[in-house]
Length: 308
Image 1 (cartoon, rainbow, N blue to C red):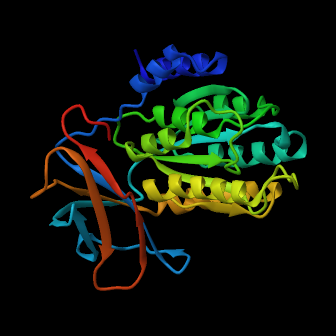
Image 2 (tube, rainbow, N blue to C red):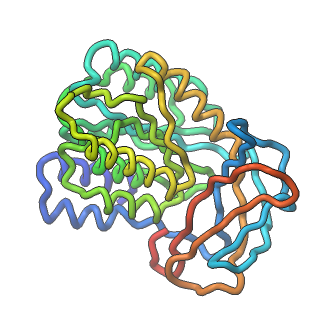
């Protein structure tokens, strides 16, 4: 059974109920295995807010569980990209906001290179898998045009479903997660979705508006703060960052800026040495010989049959 086929079954199960069968499908779909030949760490290097280019292995210091590692390869703007768009289509998006959202996603599709692929998942009260990873830009544009809004918000279920679309190939994967973080209808708890993110090699960029789109004055402050923390956890644990758009009209510009930044990230490859062969490995990446900030995945799971 392919990844997409399993996910279709998962989406159907979750859409109908949070049943035991759906939970079993979740456990099957959530496995992201890593090979033993090498570990890849996707890293963003910035000086202020500007990405830094032109770095080599000699510019990085990488530690695995505190042990200094030898970086065997540094890739930059060379690997194909997989862009998984996970979109909030709850009722607050209906109307003109949905038009802006479609424009933003279409801009992503138009920017795909010949080797790049994109997938499309939407969520409201129910999940919808519109397509797995594909390079067919015409088909993607058609699916984006058909998007409709309405319902509650199931961000945790949708984030998990998006992670399950990751395929084992030479590319690297970006998830654009559009949401305000205020989940109202997921059966999957936040901690489960975040745990799945930690076990994948997908880099998550949550995209949200500076003010909650629901705009309901009855929302209590700690609920909003919790939503922001959840979006931050998705980003921090995977090496991404939370990106704020000023308005729905700015989504096109925001999406294209995220994609441009992602293309400028580095992929550091190393073969673990002097560390345990199983369990959770904490990864630390620093710069050597120059100033700047590094954002990278916090770690990975290792061992035969372990989730990555």
